[in-house]
Length: 616
Image (cartoon, rainbow, N blue to C red; front, side):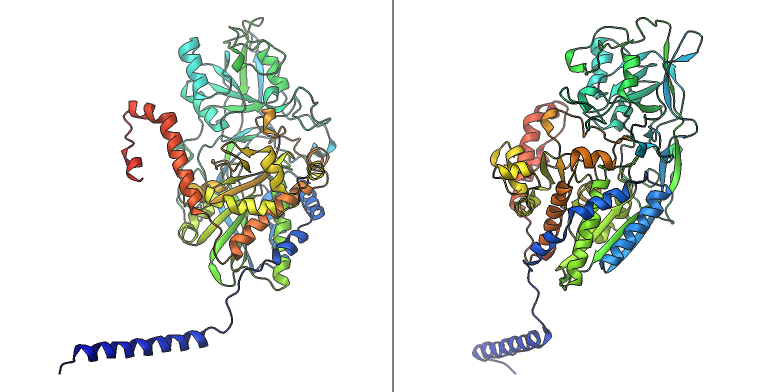
C-alpha cells in the first residue's frame, strides 16, 4: 500500500495538531498554580529586619571566650549555639559535619620564646612568653600564647640575620647581591607583603636554622596616633598568631575529605615546615634588632623602630652573643565541625546560593572572624523570619559556619571535597564574609567579575552607615565606595577586585569553579598598613571594636544588608543576575596584563603561550 505525497503531508499535519493539542491539555491541567516570580517587596522587609543591636549582642556573646579551632568553646559551645539558633530561626534543616583533621598548638605550660645567649650559654633579653594583659578581658586562661601553627619544634641558636619581609627577592638580595649567607643562621623577618607560610618556606629553602616573625610599627601603627588602649593600633606587646600551612584543607588528606573512612597520611609525609618559627612583638624585636651588627640596610628595608636597621649577622656590642629560639609547638589531631543550614527553594530547590563565614579565631577574634559570624547569625534570623511570614526563595539558600579556617581553610575545603559533584553542578554562587568590618573607611566588594553588577545594585539599596558621608550627600553604601575606592580604569564606578586565596571562597572558586565574592568594610588603604592593626592578637576584642571601629554597629549592619540582598537577588530572580560579558572582558584584561608583564620573560624561559592565543 502506498501514500501520495499530498496524503502524507496531510497526515503529518493532523498528527502534529493532535500532539500540540495533547501538550496544551497536559500543560493546562499539570500546572496547579502559577510559577512564583521575584518578590521585590521582600527586600525592604529584609533590610529592616537586620538589626545592628542584635549584631552587637551576637558579637558580645561570641567573644566572651577565646575560640580556637579544635577546642571545646569553638567545637561544642558555639556549634551548639549556632545550630540551635538556626533551627529556632525557622530553617528547614541544620546539619553538623565533623572532620578529623590535623591542627597545631603551643605547649601552654612551656611557652615559646626568643632570647640572647652569652658566651657561657646563659639566657638574657628573653622575649615575653605571653602578651601583656592591658584589659581584664584579655586575662583568660584559655588564651593560647603566640605561636605559628605547624611550626617544627626546636631550640636552634646562632647568628641573627635580618631578612626584611622574607620574600624570595629579599633572600636573593641577601645571598647573591649583598653577600650574606643565611645558611646556618637564625633569621628575623617582619610580617607583611606575603603570606607568613611562604616566609617560612623561603627561610627553609635558604638554609635558616629558624625564623622569628614580628610586626614592625611601619606596618601596624601610624605616626599620628597612639596604640591600644588609646587607639586601635598595635601595641609593642602584640604578637600575630597564624598558620604556616601553605596548602588548603587537612594536611593529612589532600584532595579528599577527612571523614572516618579516609586514609590519613603520616606527618612525616606531609610538607610541613621543618624549621622552628615563632612570632614576637615589636617591643621584643627592638631588643634584638638594635644590637644587630653588619652594614646598614637600604631604605626600602627599614621599618619604623627607633634603631639603625642592619643586616647582621651577629651583634655589634654583643659580639660573642647568639640568638636562641625555644619552640615547643606540637601538631595534634582534632575534630572540627561545619554547621550548615538550609532554606529550601520553592521552584528550583536543586540550585544553591551559599553564604559562608568561618567561626574559629586565634583568640577572641572580634574582627576576624567574629564580626562576620555576628552578622551571619543575624542575617539567618532575618531570612528565617521572612520564611515564617510566608516568603520562600526560588532557589535554595545554604548558610555555612566553617571550622578551622585559620589553620588553612580546613572546614570549607573538607566540605567541598566531600560534596564536590553535587556542589559543582548545583551551586549558583558562593558569598563569603570573613571579617565583616576591619575598618570603617569604605565598603569593599571583591570577586568574580560576572557578579560585579549584582553587588553594585545591592550596595545602591543599602543606607550609608557613615553619618558624615550622608551629610555630604552620599546616602548609600555604593556612593562612598565609588568615591573612596574608585576603579582606576573607570572612575564612575567602584573598584571591584579579584579574589586571591585568603579565605573560604578559595576552594569554591579555584577547585570547583563556583562564582564567588567576598564582602567587608575596610580601613583606609592609603595608610599602608599590612592589615588591620591588631590582627590575630589578644587585643582583638569586643571592647576594641565597640570603642574604635564601629560603636553603633551600623557598619556591621550595612555589610549584613548588602550580603543578604545579593543572596536574595541570586536566589529569587527568575533570570539570574550574572553578567557573563563582564567575565569575558575581565579574562581578556587579565590575559593582556599577563602578556605585557611576563610574556617576554616566559618566552625567554621556554614557556609556550600558543595555547592561550588558540582560545581567542
